[in-house]
Image (cartoon, rainbow, N blue to C red; front, side, top):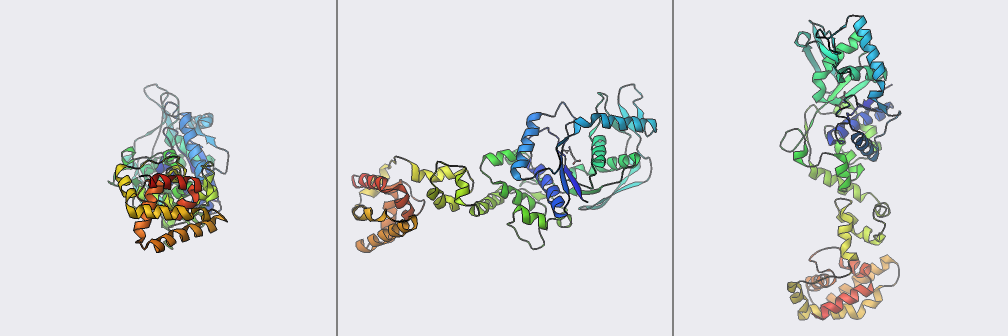
Length: 419
Ligand code: GLU
């Protein structure tokens, strides 16, 4: 039975790279019908903060990466950890600080080789003589990361340790401890790092790194999950757009890349547009209940971020529009005025029937004006759009005519005719 964990230290907000680690663990567990658990590694009491734990938990929950067991706080297992220090001291596998502090050192093997049979990176060998005895209890009485992580992983029955390759240098030290404590070794999989476009480690310099920042700026959890799954992994069929269920079905470690990946926010934005397309207007409207559903339907395929909705809806919802002097000149033109007269004269007919019927009638009205005036399409469309929105581009005119409603359209045509 596969059991994996995500073990963040609550010393900062949930980082995009950590989410990718959490996700790979989660997908691996689901793929193998195993378990995924969450452990908050808060032994460093000075740097750990509740607000960071809250940020991490909220972010994971939003993404749908949830623990199969109650959350474990590493610090609550302190007594257990300290008991194992005493055990190693008794067995002389560890010794107290010769200088008399509360620190305890673990004796590492002085010869031989330690090999990580890494599921992603392949075999990685270390010469044991290169390691110094390790501090396992610090002078302040707290246990070190390498010691606590081994105990917790072993005692929680973790079978696979999937984490960033920045931890490779810790792994031999942890293997020494597994051996000294008589625990069975888990399998290790060190996943490549995520770099910024300049190939340095992804950091604030490259833009937002905290997942909750992405959430606030209107990215969908589905897009982040799908995008991060592909950062260092590809399915055998090369498919790009997948939901969590499909990712779980397809993900395995054998197709995880050995080399680092580059974070590309443009690709993430593209992914977001794709996911937005597959979400119903009704669902999107839940985020903006004040915006008319029909408006959301029209603008939905034209947005990149959820937060773009209000901005794109403005053209339908604003009470007043103001023409620039340049626009007034355009609206004054004889041809434009003729268009406004003709639209205005037959406008009343389009506001009956279902919404689809209205759109059809609105389009027919515009087409009939093109016919009757003999103008080029642009000579009709452009001034009409300026008259209705004071913009150069935007949603289709039939949508504007219908969704602005008769009153607003009349009023704007009147203003345009008065130019
Ligand atoms: N708390 C460690 C970290 O956040 C966990 C590393 C590990 O997965 O062992 O880096």
